Length: 344
Image 1: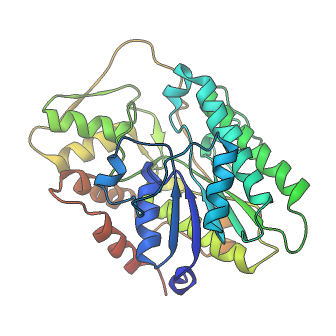
Image 2: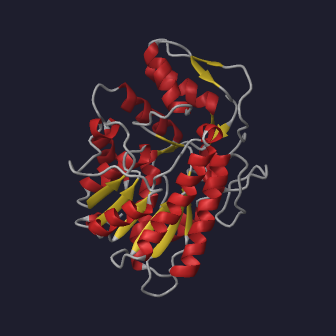
């Protein structure tokens, strides 16, 4: 990682008040970047975590193209990182229109704003591991696997990938055109995620309340990934895209599939580290379908970006649990510890 690359770099970050967005905002600021955040109003939760950098920053919606264009034009960014999304599978069943308009139309708007802005050299567009058509093959997905998705969230992310491909082919073909890279990660955990119906936040809320957490699919297996490992990949993709016109257009970021662990293992490990009688139970009822196994093949990122995950499964859970248990915000401390792991 070239830390000097980010010093003074103008970065426009959508979704800066989200889970990954707050971490990336803090990290880029520590690296000396000039960050402009663009997100919907989250009711001040990001302010409490120090993620809002400018007192006069407007909170706006990527679904409003005119306002997005105006904000991006004013910031004149060199790099755009698009994280804004409706990011929950279960919420997508309740709000499919919001999911599609935010994830698909929002992506169109970001790319359209970039198209008319000569300052942008690189854009990193985050989608998801769920953008792949899950055929039940029982193997890790590569970047060339078919896209798809049955639930509205997964489908919207596959559609966003198609939008990115279309804009790249139609409007960003020239040698001087911005380089558009899509990045796919999944099962990202870490402190500061308070989303409803997501495993780690649900565990934490129950542990704090002294009640058993409700688990839907304890035997589902996931390659749990620490938030900074995924964001490290996004930053590397931006750095390399800045310099190399021959860089692949899409990258997976995930741990070695051999690091995958079950939901049961994660809940047990978090409960043991939490202490105080923390426990969980399997909840009954009918729940939306979830695939028993999801994993990404990150060989391309290893080859082209010299990226690899720096935290194993045990460390991922330890760092995550400690963040929630601590009486103070560990974000900066954990970023500093993580940067010490990155090879020079």
